[in-house]
Image (cartoon, rainbow, N blue to C red; front, side, top):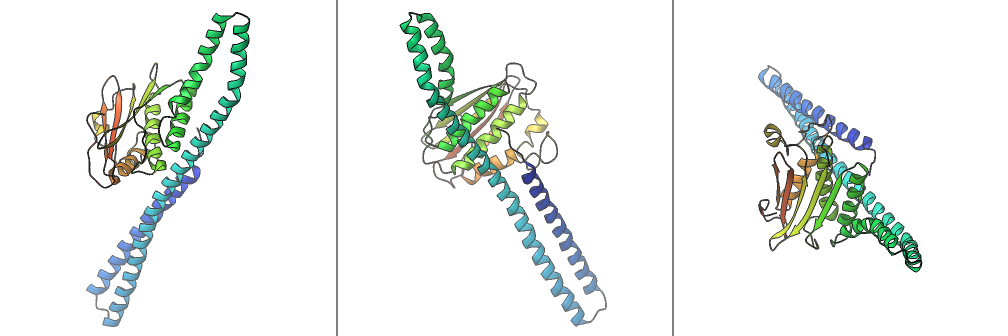
Length: 293
């Protein structure tokens, strides 16, 4: 599922540039105020300069706050757009399967009528895989999550990556908005996919769980070990090995989970790398990522 990111990247850069400019304005206003106060200007001039400087600083602080808010809003819109596209893809695939189901039945019926039972079994085996791949991703109570998992499975298949999904819970009544949890899952699956670029027989395992305390998920891939120096900074804002304008996905994922009272951790070895997350049923109750996931 590909889509252009030009608007998002440009808006984010514009907001960061605005924040930087306003920080410079604050420093300049403070410097001018200090210079005037230490000089021999009259009291009226000093008062006027201080007043004007305070106005500039206040305006700059408001602009910086709005710039940060704009960055978050664009990230949210970006995630909503991806969720809508995933649900559209899911709906299209279900309609295609419904349309093809009758045709498959007719073929199997004809083969059996002709006594070609072995050929009928082979035909059923061929179509069963596609039907099962869709059915596996329809086990949660969240339509957006189901749609995202289906879209990512299809995307991985097109790239030659085998993605397996195991759903051990209904995931109903989540304390995190559906589109936000989709953003978390999407970011982690995309990172796992990118990590498998040079891996033979690439595979991704997605596991959704639920226990008495809350909900959890694990995204595991059989890519290379993450270096220790990268592990230390992997959740920091702007840290990325993929180039300029990247490095916000894992940071946003951790922030989203922590705001809900949960957390995420990463485990990496020569055999696989896993991102393991857990969040409580009620938002706002601090909890570490469960070691049992």
